[in-house]
Length: 362
Image (cartoon, rainbow, N blue to C red):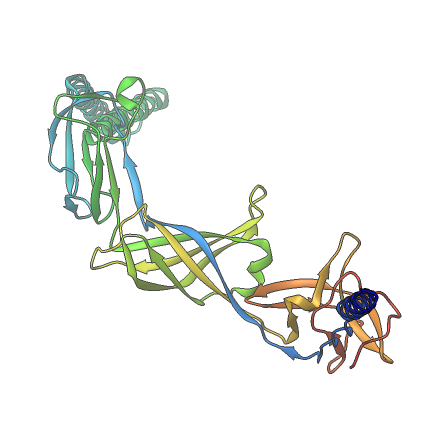
C-alpha cells in the first residue's frame, strides 16, 4: 500500500510539471513582425471619375401665342418632323382683321389728302415763279400743309404696318429644323399672352439631330480637363454601348451652390438612338499633367491630428505631414515639400508608430 501511494504521488508530480511546461510554452511572446518599406517614386496617376449628366436638344424652344386668339388649325402633332419656316399653327382673331381694315382705310385717306396738298403746293410754286402773282406767305402756308399731310401719311403707313405684323402672329412657324416633342392644344382652344391660355406652351420643338450633353464637374477635377478632350458616356436604355463626344464649351466659372463647372459636349444623333432628357453616366478621364508622388493607401494615416506618412531616417521612424490628392484603386497621390524621390516609407503605417521608434528589420 505504501509503494502504491508513492507511485501515485510521483505520477501526479510529473503531470503537474508537464502542464506547467505546456502553459509556459503557450504564453511565450512571439517575435515582432518585420516592418515592410518601399522607396518613394513619382509617376503620372491616370484615373477616371463617373458623373451623372443629361442629354438635351441642341436647340429647344417653347412656342407661345403672341396675341389673344383661338386655334383655327393645327398642322402638326407630337413626333412631326418640321423644317425651318414651316407653318405649324393657324390662329384666328376677328378683331385684328377689323383693325387691319380700319388702318388700311386711314392709310388710303391720308394718301388722298397728301396727294391733294402736294398738287396744290406744286401749282402755287410754279405760279410764284412769275413775280408778284403769289405772296411768300401763301407759299409757306402751302408748304407747311404739305409737310403736315405727309407726316400724317407716314403715321398711317406705320399704323397699318403694325397691324400687319400683329396679324402675322396668327401664323406660328418653325424657328428651326426639328421635331415636335410636346403639344398642349387642340383646335378651338383659346390662347394668348396672358391668362389661362398662356399656362403651357402651344408646342415644343427640339433639334434632335444634334444633342447637348451637359455635366457639372466638381471643382477639384476641373484642372484635368481641356477643350477638345474626348469623353465617353453611357445611357441606361443602351447599357452595352459606349458613346463618345468632345468637350465643346466650358462655363469658365464655378456654380456658387454646387461648386462645380458646367461642361458641355456636342453629340451627333443622326440615327435618333439618343433621346433628349435621357440621364447619362459620363466617364471623365483624369490624366495628370505632371508626375506626383504616388503611394499605396495603406502608407497614409488619417488621424484626428493630421494626415501623414511614416518615413525611415537613420533606421528610425518619422512622421511627415502630407496633402492627399486623387485616389484610384489602392493608390493615392500625396504632396509634401519634405519628401524626396527614393526616400523610404513604411508600406503599412499606423498611429502606433511614433517619431523616433526604431524600425524592426528582422
